Image (cartoon, rainbow, N blue to C red; front, side, top):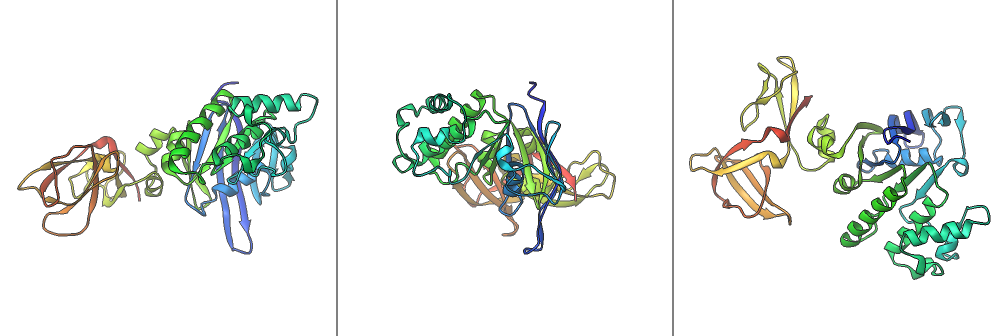
Length: 347
């Protein structure tokens, strides 16, 4: 199967909650491709978990369609129950059965005389073969997550869905388990969707990134492409720090406090947003510069330089730069922009 082949498609998915008077899904579209990991990123309340649950069959659609290939799973008149969908699920709390050992948890739902052998093979692949007889309370959080993933993979599902699978772990373990999970999914050739609200995590795990806001998928693509070229100010904010400026296009340019930027493709007078990532700023010592460093702090892997107009305290902007830096609080600076980190979008 080609890795560009669409395994599962969501078209115009709608889900309304009458009591809340709002749409959790408002005509959402999404494709999951063979052997690819899609990260679905969005803030709380954006509809990402509802979309996952709708794909799994745990939520009914009020409109639109979800289909696995040519087989319709959900639409306004059809709802195939979860147990007959070829979906593997890893829940946020792992949902292991406390009265079953690891092997029995992985084998749960498997049919046939080979069930135990298949489950054991999945545990071995997760490097947990020696924990086959251990109960969930005897396993660490990371081990429980790996058992949950082994259980999801055991029936060879068409799609694996993971709902915030690393959110309950400390940072070091989260990174370690995240990498292991990606390796496991890749080794299995799985088509997977991971729901997360963490932009760094989404960028790290995804072959394909989908951004969700207000019940809609607002942008999809390769993670680096989505980060470098967001389609809107909302999309840019979902992927981390960004400075946003309003401007009107004049002669193919849009003005910013740091000079005009290219706005080719927009007609004159068009209102736009200029999106500038912190990596775009190059600050240079300049006694006659129009800006001044207001604060300098470490972000661990880089420095954050907060700067503002030299003759005033507001507004403040943020530049990310590598260690070491000759710039300190109070220094006057000039500012240049790297166009690779600047995007102009309609407003």
